Length: 213
Image (tube, rainbow, N blue to C red; front, side, top):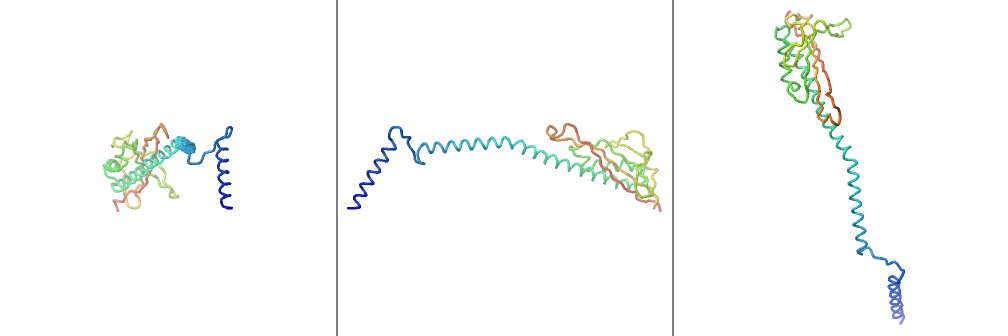
């Protein structure tokens, strides 16, 4: 009997709740699975996508600039490394050639065959071959009176002030020689980093191998 009374009370309560939900002046409430709930979730997803696109539009230029910088830095490091290697190879050829008549032309030919002489990433503007004076403290200074300047193809720039045939190759007295390669790196992304080429130079110093004892 008690159970039947509870059932009747529960049924009456449900009727009151249903009537109150749809009564005049009462705002209806919907469950999460209703159409209004699904529409609200769809709107939130659209707003989330719009926010993601806005964030990407802000970050993309910065990321693009960083990628260009990494790419450009790699090319620049390659050019600098090849220029150093080329200057070293040329200086070693000068040391081996000693006072041969074609010492400078032979060394320039070696430089042209290295990466700095064949790459299109950089342009060699000038190659200098000059005498170095050894000071009392062991340092080397440039002798401006014995200074040869060349284009990469071997054409002299001005007068030849230090003919290779006059170089000292006596054991213990052989000359010190310097090689300087002047080159420029042409920016591949110049619009973003720089408008003008980057002018650089690299130097290698060596002593001529003695050929007279």
